[in-house]
Amino acid sequence: MAGDVSPGRFASAMKDAVITTVIAAALFFFLVAYKTTLVTGIGLVLEQRWDRYLWLLVAVFVLRFSWLMLTGGRVRAPKSKVTITPRGDVMRYAGIALLLLGIALPFIITATAGRGQRLYLDLSILIMTYVMLGWGLNIVVGLAGLLDLGYVAFYAVGAYSFALLAQYTGLGFWACLPVAGILAGFWGMILGFPVLRLRGDYLAIVTLAFGEIIRVVLLNWYSFTNGPNGISNIPKPTLFGIDFGRGEGNFADVFGLDYSSSHRLIFLYYIIFILALVTNWVTMRLRRLPVGRAWEALREDEIACRSLGINTTNTKLTAFATGAMFGGFAGSFFATRQGFISPESFTFIESAIILAIVVLGGMGSQIGVVIASVVMIGGIEMLRNLDLLKSVLGDNFDPNQYRMLIFGLAMVVIMVWRPRGLISSRTPSIALKKRKRIGADMVAQGEGH
Image (cartoon, rainbow, N blue to C red; front, side):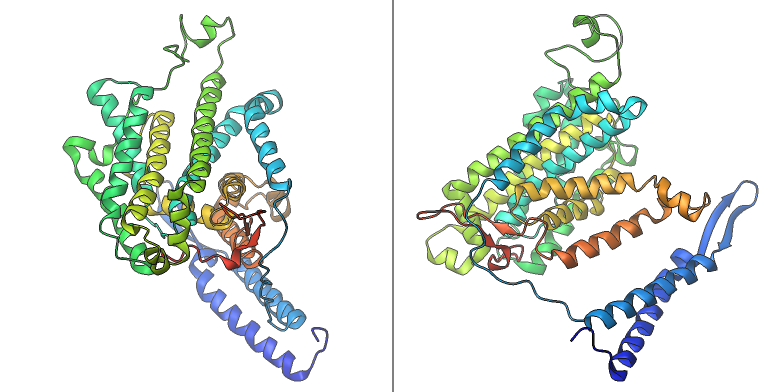
């Protein structure tokens, strides 16, 4: 039993805890024990922080030893249940609640946030952007089972397509938006052709390389993309030709309101909110159509999919093109929201974050992507200012230095607790009599098959 303590078990737990502490000591030596500080007139000064380093090692040892003594190091495997519950009202009510909250969120923020309303509106826009990106990648990874590590490439194609079209043709956001999505979908098809015969790790490597190729091209094609200097003065979207700036004829003047910079942010929020809803609606509709069922058949078993007469070439290309199109729409919005883009905005870490959102939320789950986006993007931003930790650890503690470490530990805990994602059950796209939710461990997803 877990409560029994024997000398052998005590010695084994002690040995394991010591080994874990030694590994932690090596990993965190240059991260915690030393810190470089830029001092004016002197340069970089190396600061030693042995007290924090030793406290961290003590915490690692105590936690590891306690875990082994309490559980014996055993991790219970999740129970496999084919049928969990009938399709109930819980998920539908949760979706309706999230929809109503999303509609009312800007007004809630402006009514309660006070001076911080701009910060929270910006954060809401950022979260909704990643929700849309997560839903786009969910088509490729969650539904079709194709592991894509270069999704940021389509994000970049959409952003640069809009910025370059606006720069060279003078077109506005609404005219360039569909063109940016179509171009991104076209590049998705171009990526799909070389990877038709690849699966698993090889597929991931090729998609990762594709994302880096796009970034390097944008970085070095100076005459066309302006290289590392990026593109600035990207036009903002208008409401039927009405601008949100200052002066006569703007939004506030037309509607008789006092000018506020939050008007533009609220308008941008509703643009990305509507784009995300369109992404979700199209995805759910496609999932119930033959092409969506072909994606899920491809995810489960490609050989069986071929034996059923399904054209796997067209199935893969449609998955890549559809997911890339929505990534292009999100990139176009990102460009108009920022007003400036450069290749540094489209690094591999962006692809990793979007993929982490899909995996953490539960591959194939639309609501899971929303929850994971709030947890990941909102969590990262909120960790920039942890007044509670400052009050406990002192004013010299800067939470911004450790926010990625804290966030990484939280991610590890969540994935150990919920290895199949936060929403780990699935509803079949089509059923004979009555739809019943099934366990995610019965679905072969994210394996590149």
